[in-house]
Amino acid sequence: IAKEVKDALSSSSLIRKMFEEGAALKKIHGAENIFDFSLGNPDLSPPPAFHKTLLELVNEETPGVHGYMPNAGYPETRAAIAEKVSAEHGVLIDSSHVIMSVGAAGALNTVFKAILNPADEVIVNKPYFMEYRAYAKNHRGNIIEVETEDDFNLNLEGIRSALSNETAAVLINSPNNPTGRVYTSETLKALSAILSLHGEKTGRYPYLIADEPYREIVFNGIKTAPVLNAYKNSIVVSSYSKSLSLAGERIGYIALSPDADEAALLAEALIYATRVLGFVNAPALMQRCVERLTKETVNIAVYRERRDAFKQVLDAVDIHYAEPEGAFYIFAKVPHRKGRAAQETDAGEDDLAFCEHLKKYLILGVPGAGFGKKGWMRFAYCVNDKLIKASADAFKKALAAWRGEMIR
Image (tube, rainbow, N blue to C red; front, side, top):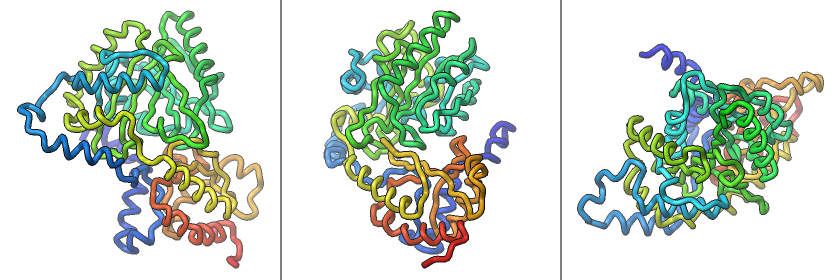
């Protein structure tokens, strides 16, 4: 086994670790008795239009329909995605600015392959989806972490200070996993000004990469701000894993700003990277599906209702959390134990210990350390609402024991 991979295995994803432990607990206690909030695996069925479209496509017998196509994807699919992205981001792009990908993860690896030189840096905002680090390392790049503000908004001055001659990109994720924060247009414009000024000074304009698989999952009238019209060297990566509940189908896309420096060459580089990374092309059947479903989503209202139900559970036991504006996660602060001083709490309780404690009550969440933020933990509420409500008693008992209180 390669040393780098062997080392990585010893610190493998805490998300997957908790998910696997949950699977083991379900075998012992029954799935209905485990409050598993570990993995962001959507439980909502895809919309009815997906099933109808899929059946129609499966029954087609056109010769070559399951064969190779251009590495960038079917031209008609790329055109449909371009129309969708143009409306979302307030720019006019065409099919030449779209490359179909094997999910958002495949898209990010493709982008990093295309833009990173050895030791180039990618700035991320902490907390963040920790697989970003592995994706950058796959292509000889380094992740540079910047702490967010206390409310988990972008720390613009922190990003400014982290920029260097080696900065290839700033990677943002809005709505954010794990915090649910959605960045505003004003914030993105301010970030654009910082990146533009850095480019003018150094001659190297970093890419702004927006990871957007949760774009459509926003609440209370909030809108996900456009990126492609905010900064010329911007790239959007996305997938249908969340908006259509097609996580296992691995279908996504990359969309480029039409104003990007050497946009045509960048598109060629991404197409080349798609091929040599072994993806070859995005799944053919799913490309043909999503081409017809650009205006469809799962029922977002269900996630809003689940968010509110989970907030009630946490409020009842006085667990503090960041208000989720989108996605389907709640990022909660580990409560301090009875007798701990306030300054100790501020320094961060042991999220690993708290998660182990919750497991005794058959509650599964992911330690904040798995996102680079100790003292916090993430709960995924993309689960049945009955499970969320049923967890209330388990949370009450777990928190009473954690705080050394008597259960009434």
